Length: 337
Ligand code: 5MM
Image (cartoon, rainbow, N blue to C red; front, side, top):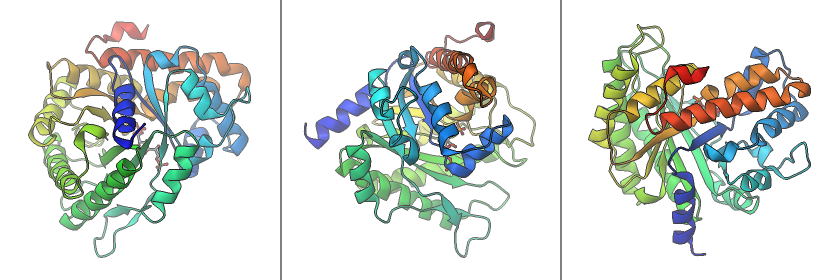
């Protein structure tokens, strides 16, 4: 299969009605934090146990089209000794891989950060592709304050995101482009809308400069919400603010927008996605690529005990199913019972 056909076929598998993407690509410090919250010490074996359990939940492929893995997991075997990428393919799920190397302070821009990982990216992508990855993910992070993010941060992060996306496509790997505007702070929903619009404009300008094919990428943005220390907005307010910004700046050629949950509770993230999809037809498929909002209940149910595996799988499936419904605006809170 040629590169273009590979990209088209992966996009087609990822963007499906009733399905979304599971982000299970927490780096070691992040997964340690998540495990700590349920009283588990993070070790390679515990990470393998937990991730193997949730990824082998029977029927997961009905609601999950792709899973973003961390490098370690891509090379691991499940509890049944099946390579994880193979386990996913057997569920009809496309394996993906986080390829950024995290973030660091942006020099001469106090408070801003820049995501790193372009050095050697091509070589790593080749290894990941041979291991079974068909799509990749890179996350930029933007802090909101009265003065942040700076223009420098918006431009510099958009540039690396676009360069990453171009390299991925050249190798037949679909890039997930993730500019996350953080929910931390007491800013208003209007301030979040302004920052999100500026960030997305810059990202799409950089993608155009680097000749990224919009038809062969997925956007993974944050929703437009108030800061978590501000008053909560209703799902309808979040949906309206989000769709207004996206209609202004995201070209119709982009096939899918898969939101991150960014610290929303599992129920909030489902309600907000449902409200977004209730606003009527949009040019793009509007779905999820949640990490915490899909996994939190499963992590609580597992709590480090293999005997709780079936309960963890059930919790995972439940959130996947409910978000699958929110993907078409057919979720209702009664379905939680
Ligand atoms: C924003 O985080 C991404 C989506 O997860 P949430 O839905 O929980 O917000 C997630 O894919 C994130 O990029 C990975 O967990 C990797 O994060 P770290 O901090 O470990 O690089």
